[in-house]
Image (cartoon, rainbow, N blue to C red; front, side, top):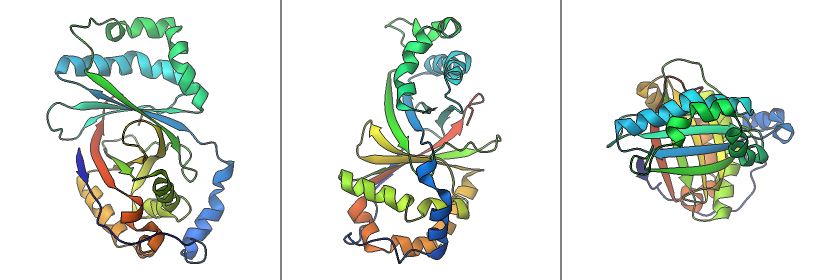
Length: 267
C-alpha cells in the first residue's frame, strides 16, 4: 500500500450554494438521493503468509461464502488480490448488505445453512497450528447518498483502485463527504472516466474517521490518463479551489491500493 499526505491549503467556512457550476447543481437535483436505499458494505482484508492460506481462503469464498451470502440478499460480492504486492498478497473481500440488520444476522443464518457449513468445513475446521489466515481486518461502511448502491462494472479483465481518505476529526470527514455528494465530485468522477464501484463512510474499523471508495479501470494506462483528465477539469478546479474544501482542512492522508479480481469475484 502507498500512503501520502496531501499538499496543504487554507480554512473552511462558507456555503456551497450559489458558487457551484450549473451542471453540478442540475445533477444534484436529478439524482434524488433522499429517495434511494443506501447499502452498507463490509470490507475484509485477510493477511496471508503462504500459498496454502491463499488457496484455503479463496476456496472458502468461491465454494461456500459467496453463494450463502447471495442467498441472504448480499449480491455482487467482490474478492480481490493485490496488484504487484509487496511481499505476500492480501485478500480483499467486499460484501454489500441491504441493511445493518442483514450484516448483524448473516453469521447466525449462515451457521444454520447446511450446504454452507459443509462447503466451508475446510476453512472453518482448521487447526490453530495451521490457520487459514494470519488475521482479518474488517471495516463497515454506509454508502454515500449520491451513490447509494454498489455499481458492478463490465465483466472483463480490469484493474481496481481502493482509496481511503482519512481526516483529523469527524467534522472534517463529513466535509469531505459533502464535497463528494453535494458539491458534485462524484458527478465529475463519472464524467471524466473515474468509474466508481462504491463510496462508503466508515462506521467501524481502523483509521477513523475515514471514507473509502473503489474505482475501476481497464489498465494502468487508463488509470493515469483519467486521473490526469480529472485533475485538469474546470469544474473540479472550481470546487477544489473553494476554501472550505482545502485539503489541509479536511484531509490528513490518503491510502491507495491497486487490486485485481479473482476469477470467481462477482465484481
